[in-house]
Length: 300
Image 1 (spheres, rainbow, N blue to C red):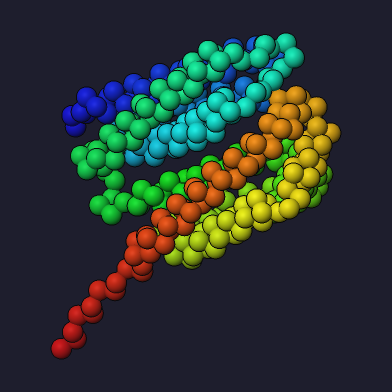
Image 2: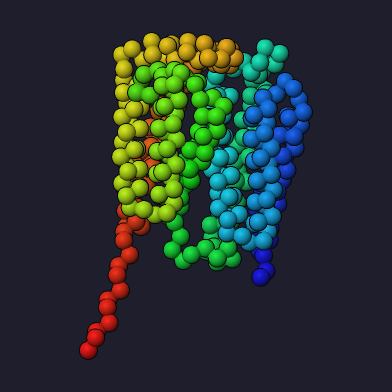
C-alpha cells in the first residue's frame, strides 16, 4: 500500500519529537540536580513517541490514536504554560536566574511553533483518505467526544502517577483545602472518575455520556463556588501555606500574589473548557444512540 508523503512527513515529525524527548530525558537522568521522576517520565514519553512514529510509517491504527494523544498533551501543555510565562513571575530554583522579557517571548514563540505542527498532523490524520489507509471504521468516534474521552483517560493516568509521587500534596475543591490523607482521597476520587468516564466515552457508552454531563455540571458548580466565595483570597492563602508546608520550593516557584492570579485565571479557563465539553456531549447524543435492530425476517 502506497503511503502518501503527508503521512510520511507526519511520522517524521513524531519521530523528531520523540527523539528530542528521549534525549532530554536521558540527559536529565544523568544530572543529579534534576528531578529524576520527571526525567523518567520524559524518557518514557520519548520512547513512546519513537514507537508511535514507526507505527505511523507502518500505517498502524494504534499509532494514529497515539498521535492524537500526543497532540492533546502538547496543546494542553502549551495552553497551560504560555499563560504562566506571559503573566506570572516565576522563580524556578534559587540557582536559576529570573526569566527576562526577551526569554519569555522566545519561550512563548517556541510553544506556539510546537503547537502548529501538532495541528497539521491532526488535520492530515483525520482526512477520509487517511482513515481508509489506517483502516478506521466507517463510523468513527466523533472527534469532540474522542478528545474529551482521551483527555479524561490521560488525566487519570497522570493522577495515578501523582498518587505515587505526590499523594499527600494539598488539593483545593469547592474552595476547601485538603491536606494529608484527605488530599489523597480527593485525588483518588478524581482519578477513578476520570478513568471510568474516559473509557466509557471512548467505548461510546450512553451511560458514560450522561454521567460525563453530570460531571461537567459538578465542575462548573465547583468553579462558581470557588470564584464567588467572599473569602476566596483567604482560601487561596490557606492553600498557599499548605503548599509551602508540603514543599518549600512551591512557595518560591509561585508567590502568593502570582498563585492567586493563576488560580483565578485557571478557574475561568477551566469553566470555558467545561462549557464547551458540555455542549459537545449534549450535541453528540445521537452518536450514542443504541443501534436500531434489524427487522426480523418473516417466517412465512
